[in-house]
Amino acid sequence: MEKKRAPFAKWMGNSNEITRLFLKAGQIPDMINLAGGLPEASVYPASELADIAKQVINKNPEETLGYCPIEGLPTLRDAIAKKFSKGNLKLSRENILIVTGAMQSLDLVGKVLLDDGARIAVQDPTYLGALDAWRPRHPTLVPMNIHGHNFNPASLLENTQFAYTVPNFSNPTGSLVSKECRQQLVDTSNDCGTWLVEDDPYGVLYYDSDPIPSMLELSADENNDCYEGNVIYMGTLSKEIAPGLRLGWVISAPEMINALATAKQGSDLCTSGLSQQITLEAINNGLMEKILPNILAIYKSRRDGLCAAMEAYLKPYFTWEKPVGGMFVWAIAKDPKLNTDILLEYALDHGVCVTPSSVFDPNGEYRKAIRINFTHNPLETLEQGIKRLAKATEQLKL
Ligand code: PMP
Image (cartoon, rainbow, N blue to C red; front, side, top):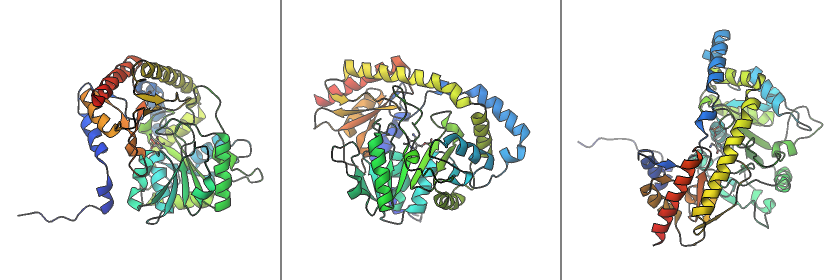
């Protein structure tokens, strides 16, 4: 007898074929994975974290192992407020929500700002996780070509609920948004009342220059002791310490923090108290500052190694710009007919996995580029992966 079962929600039908291919890739032995946005595991400060975890559990069993306030531990909210207060930007506890990774921030923003069909302006191409988080709310996506010569946010942001950008080393392109462009977005959001989502997991990964001020900083009013601007800033420990802690924070106006906390209650009640206590201790004892130079040195040399291997083997097929930070190189096919969804299948057969551009396109159509990660693999593996990719591209073109 046929089993009767309620169907899945309609949005589930919108997932793409590429996700299926990635699942397959994970099971292939000797696969070189240049697709994920993964850190190098050896940079996780394992023994320091183990010591801190033991110490904070023994010291505060109730706060580490019990439920916490939805908004996060007051002590951690204060510590984040202090850490990010700078120049005109003065933050108080009411400006901070502790979340379970930046991915939760994206999900919660969708919950509090999107009714079915609502308009969002998105930096194009867009982080796949953000598209995934908002897909169940059927938004209307307005792509923004932030680096285009005629970029004019006024016409794009009008009547949108929010504009989404990753200004520091975009995922997927690795590009950096200029200070002028950040200011333009802030000014336009003030004019039209749209929220500005500033997703910033890569903000500490500058390899060649000093950081550009965040839109959060650019939108601050020096006369206020509490931030009241339009930016919804998202931070995370995932690239600075370890993604497994699942610890992030939102910085925004108290009105937005309260709305997000209401949504968080129906999502996970609270972020792990253990992770929060570990983070507080890590901030207080300067753990991030201690380990960052090593992370930057490893990633910078891998960025250089990947670009050198691409120069040696991929030049006939792709163009790219060397990123000045972050985790990715975005390579665009020289041949306009090359379809990178199909290239992925050839690449998997050659034992290497990269991410094709279609998954980052708000319309799912752009198939000329690939995202290559350089942080997760050692130099020799990066070179081997690029050699395999070159062979796969050659074969596809035959
Ligand atoms: N936003 C962007 C742009 C990302 O690249 C990522 C992770 N790769 C996230 C958010 C999610 O980060 P988290 O691990 O803090 O959930």
